[in-house]
Image (tube, rainbow, N blue to C red; front, side, top):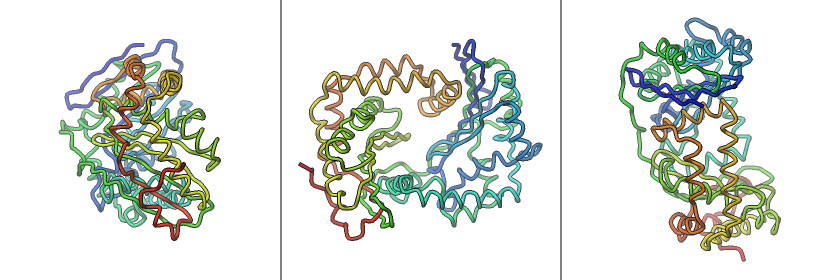
Length: 420
């Protein structure tokens, strides 16, 4: 495997990892822009622009784009997060250059046709409605607001029905000119790719875009740790509880991933064994670690019947408190190996490698090889786990979001008692 990176004269980074004997080529274009870069009247615009990229360029219609990628045996898609927008494609190796040209074209030259925009607004309004009907997704939007309030980082990536309806072509074009600039973009390739050819294609597509400075989000993240409930007619109460953690680039980030895996990353984890297997309080319980550029969240998700909610909340907190004692060597090894497996399996997919490179270059400013990540996991000790508990959980009051039949349960927004 051969990794190479170039920085074009306008600041755009182009990286590749050629993989011998690969039969596919994968590409990613990652932009350092997402929901937290939006002003109040721009809510949802990053996500809308991502949708519009596939709706035609000055040269091709939406149908022609779809037909071209299907002809290449291609898989193409995109996603928007609070901090990044990523476009990606994977094709048969003989179509590598054609796929990269087309991926660059849809990002560099979106037509933003009025008729397509009108239709796509309706599509996203349906997506918002679908999100509202998916309680296990909606509760995470509520939890994001519990953590970061009415700030860009606390808002839904989808925007609101009013904001989506209000977006016009001129606003999208202005947002693209402001944010889709070389200093905020990374283009990566993996698999059956030639770095020189990749660079040539990218230069041709983006050479007209001038040198630019990298802009920061509008606001600094401020974790507020609020507690809120949202009454909704459901069979279960959806629960997300969590604490402020660290940014993605922090020295503790990898260790916290091991910590959350130990607590709720699999069927042998403490949360699963105690709350589902021993107490039978829920069908699903898990923990997670999310990192941003200046903040992070360590959290737990579950769902249960209304009458079991007090016991569930107390049991979650009690399991978290069990981390005050260091784990056994076997328990720590299980958590480490789950994370290691994810890294190793990522290396077996050209598309995962392309996205991995892109995210690393945006978050860390460099590509962190698998060997470095595996070594950092291996270096974690039981005492690290106990220190993380003391630093990020012990004595702290968590943010909490409850969604479902929770009318009359305001008392649970206070500190729940640890279940015996």
